[in-house]
Image 1 (cartoon, rainbow, N blue to C red):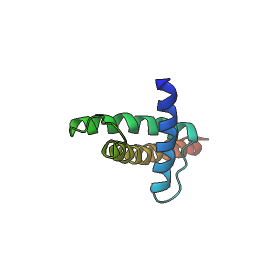
Image 2 (image 1 turned 90 degrees about the vertical axis):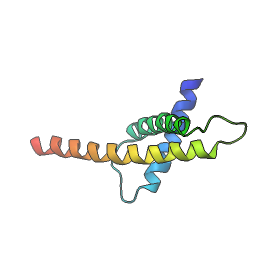
Image 3 (image 1 turned 60 degrees about the horizontal axis):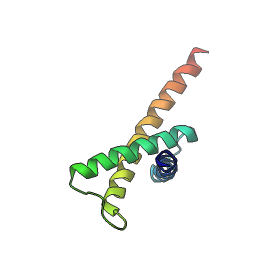
Length: 92
């Protein structure tokens, strides 16, 4: 069940990150979901580093760190994806 929640949260975080980043992102949905999952993991680690532990109720601080991490990861992965895609089309 933990993997299912990770995929759902990653999907949602990835879509929100794509909506926040200005311009058009060309990365596919599966890559955006993976970036969202990585953003959630990185955001949790950063939140723990700042001393934000799980609390009863909604952890807004932890979610904010997750979203910021997802935005950064989606941004850089999309740049890398477009760079790789551009190099692939230039060779053919």
